[in-house]
Amino acid sequence: MSTGTAGTAGPPERHAEAGDRRREQRGWYFYDFACSVYSTSVLSVFLGPYLTSVAKAAADAEGFVHPLGVPVRAGSLFAYTVSVSVVVAVLLMPVAGAAADRTGRRKPLLAVAAYTGAAATTGMFFLEGHRYLLGAFLLIVANASISVSMVLYNSYLPQIAEPDERDAVSSWGWAFGYTSGALVLVLNLVLYTGHGSFGLSESEAVRICLASAGVWWGAFTVVPLRRLRDRQVPADGRGAAGSGWKQLLATLRDMRGHPLTLSFLLAYLVYNDGVQTVISQASLYGSEELGLDQTTLITAVLLVQVLAVAGALGMGRLARVYGAKRTILASLVVWTLILLAAYVLPAGEPAFFYSLAAAIGLVLGGSQALSRSLFSHLVPRGKEAEYFSAYEMSDRGLSWLGPLVFGLTYQLTGSYREALLSLVVFFALGTVLPARVPVRAAVAAAGNAVPARI
Image 1 (tube, rainbow, N blue to C red):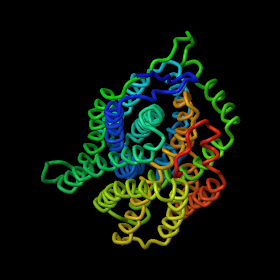
Image 2: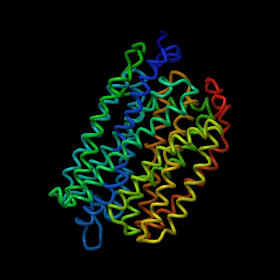
Image 3: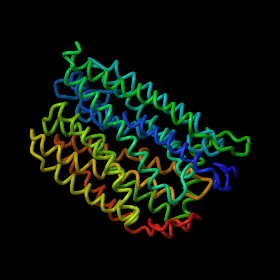
């Protein structure tokens, strides 16, 4: 059995037994299973409306809170906090990627990031009264932690899957994540709708739902930590942590030698910023602009989770027939139509909201899974973590602009409809830019085997 390296020019393991590779893949799926509950229950359902209500309770007569003396409309606090969390992640992710490539010790770094995020999420149980600053702080820590952990998680994909397996493996990872999100949302729905019969107030039920996501995240992270393995790299005596930004700059310079890879990454940055903003702000839009109750929002996101499993696997099948690039472009057209439909959605009509949730579910998992697998073909061997660090900065780390635009538009107009409409530009540009990238040539230029369909 040959041994690959994660931080050198040598190829990763190419002759591993199929059983060992499958075992690692199954373990890898479970990190999506563990952390996706944070993205669904916390970020997509409960925290936006709940943190906004806490901020409104603490607001002055004009509806403003004043974190660090800065006047912020209470309704914009959540969007701004998401933006700040992404900036923090930008500072940390290059360090994590450099450390992983230089030391080969992905698992310990993954464990630190995962359990820091899980602890911060569990701490949301104490978010009550006027403690909007506590909520903002915990959101920043949890969001930055999940971003760092995903750098390390995604960088395993080229090591545990052969080129022709990656679309399927990436799609299965997303499917596992959406399955866990749906399962926990069912439990959340039972607890929230029946909180009185459990002797709980509505606020206590929400805080338990928030904290349980952290417990789930920490508990199921054990599986990938047991099954994934680190690849050895030669010791060079350099300190990885101090070289994170230096390594990122070196990675970007290296990408200039792979301009097609860089072009796809920039295109992904644009359209994914829109995706991430829709995910994080949809619940806030539903509650504040459309006047929908929490039960409706939970049910809608549950519908997204259920259909996203089928969507991720179905789009993976489409990619095998039409190629990942064409399938991604088709999904971006659907995303644009979803936003335009949401802009004219009537208030107080759950049926229309459910229809949009169904459409989002069918394209959400597939567009993300195929983007990840397509990028993995564009990464030169031996540079997985550093390139995926740059990718994750596009996936999460540079997804601050969408929430900032959303928050500023609301601050200026007082309308969540206008804020939502401002996101169309991300999908419009995001459809044009990747269409111009010749992905087969990009894969070959990266020195990788070109799949039959891509």
